[in-house]
Image (cartoon, rainbow over all chains, first blue to last red; front, top):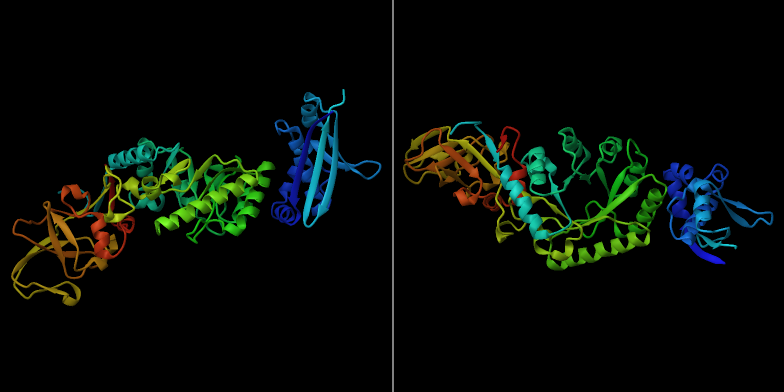
Length: 118
Length: 366
């Protein structure tokens, strides 16, 4: 059963300027394995994390470092959630998180579905 | 009269009472006492304490140095500073828990890099029509998005959004209010949750209820002067400052005697002249020459000839004696000239009359 959906858009140029001006943003928002990716990819990953928060409907207990955007064996994006954030999902009965990303016209978009399997 | 030769007496009870009066009038959740420029010349620290006693719960200053002086004096109330050195180091202000008014993206980034003992707290300043400091309308979306991102990342906290009215006209203020509402809408779209929205200073607090929002900034009214000058203002305000000295010399002169530089005035008939030892070095505007008056023994007398650096000459009656108190301006209820009258005589505004008092004049809070 779908228990939540979330979508978020990030202006790539603005995001790139922001992380160039405040490099600590990258440390704060991304996990070790994400940090070396190019700015447009980081923008999409940030959108993905924001979309997950929107899908859940509440950011209480969420930590940026507990969310990693990776890719599955088909090179489709996936959201790996760990730690305190994983506990928040579990508490809400969310068993699966589905993610789709897109970039166009200077915008990175992420769409997340939160699913609860019985 | 005894005490310092040159004295600006500051009635702190008047400042407390003015804060109370204005706060009751505005009925906002919060009221900020603006104590920049050494409390408009009244002494920032005693003025701040008096205003807090009168019910103000925020303090506002222009720059970080002024804010840190309040903290050094042990004042713990919330403080906002909004006009910064382009090379400012925000770290000491962040450590001192001072809210930083941010007018540019560069300032926003610099504040985000200044994380110290606590989280930097910012209030975004937008330009709503004065063309001074404040983010321009075409920067709002980007700046608010950046601020929201920095806040999401835990690098800053965004407490508020503010602007300032031009008071140019009713229409200009209505435009500024519309621009401010636009800025609030843009901020909300960027995901900012604003706890303090403020636009009104004394003028708005008194005359435009729709500009009050969560907080009013009380500046000139706190000191008992009206933002509208002699065109009237809120009832019940008491001017806090009295500038006084004592007569340093008295002489009788025959008809035709020239007075002060350039002899711009000559006695039309025999008269008496008193030397009043305050001049433009003390903030008495030289441009008031030819119009100004001073109260001696409670009676007004005309200033004759040019106002000089250290002194002015006043034509007096037979009763005036050496050492008599001479009040340059104060509460007009006492018969003294008001700061508003001096402003008219000098072609300026009451704000400048009180703020420009020079360093030789001793401030005596009472």
